[in-house]
Amino acid sequence: RFLCLRSAICAQEVAAMGRMHSNGKGISASALPYRRTPPSWLKITAPEVSEHVCKLAKKGFTPSQIGVILRDSHGIAQVKSVTGSKILRILKGNGLAPDLPEDLYHLIKKAVAVRKHLEKNRKDKDSKFRLILIESRIHRLGRYYKKNKQLAPNWKYESATASALVS
Image 1 (tube, rainbow, N blue to C red):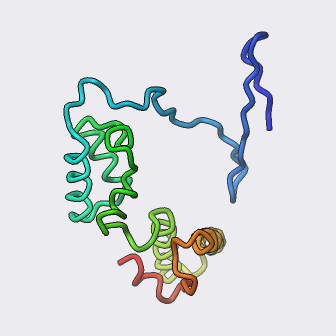
Image 2: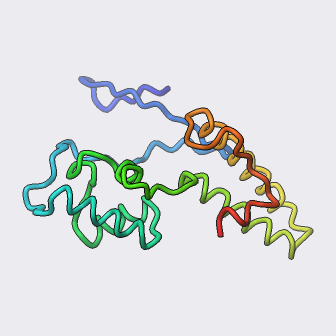
């Protein structure tokens, strides 16, 4: 932990969490608006937002893609401020949540792409090392999600069947 002195009057404590497989300890992040109520100019109601979210999920968009589309096309900055629940909770309530959590899905997709690259380029030692790091993150995340009961207790990542999970 670092003590960040902005001025003589106030001292702000900033906890810097390190990255998993590199040296970065970046502290930049986006800030949520202070007010938790939806903006006064937003005339869309909570059921309409939930309906939009479900419609986009049925088209095959991930929760983060849905958030980006709603922000950019419909002017809904925070779905939670309008509906009271987050996008993934809305999807779970309607039975549209993805089988795999999104971050785990993208790590598996990346591992499959690196493995495919290694089939063509067998001598690429750096990619082989990076694949080991990616797969260790997959195993760690899988352990976390099994502990929090978001994955089945018998779920196991296997590189042979991984391409079937992300196709």
